[in-house]
Length: 255
Image (cartoon, rainbow, N blue to C red; front, side, top):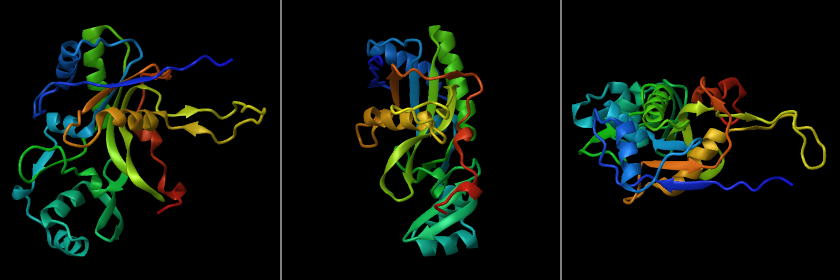
């Protein structure tokens, strides 16, 4: 009989409003200590990209942005702020879709998402927006290394963002940066309950963990930016990267 798998998800409460230059690893460790929690081997720390971006200074004040003629044209079609559209275009390598006020792009990182991942929520300062981290994998590795050094525990780190999905309503959290865990579990070659050998099963566990963590993180006024996922037996990897989960455009059927 397969052993029972108990997975716990809990928020890291008491973090301050993150600003540029803040050391997230130190703040997370302090908040864990203050709430009476301790890291355990195998814990996965899920962090929203907005606080990572704010700590790294990846924010833009729209009042300082001069919109190009092209941005103004796109803004008129999508009914968006021209300065916001200018920032979105700077963060994009291509426009995938424009429809009903939506602007779907492929970011310079390779992600396909709304508004190049430029986020207006949970960002202090009037007119300030958060960009995606320049390299979310590197951000995750840095946080992982610092917290492991401080705690002596083996940990995984996921930097998450909220994305929509083709043909599905509502948004979920996905992993845009990964450290310490293999983001995809390849189950090809395994057998199902009836002996059928799986030929195409590859589970995006980093996305599943990021989405599960959002149950504790949330998006509203009581949201916290960090959660711990404990008890999931992932495959540890020192070469983890969220880019492994990017599907080549020629294999994408929905665009």
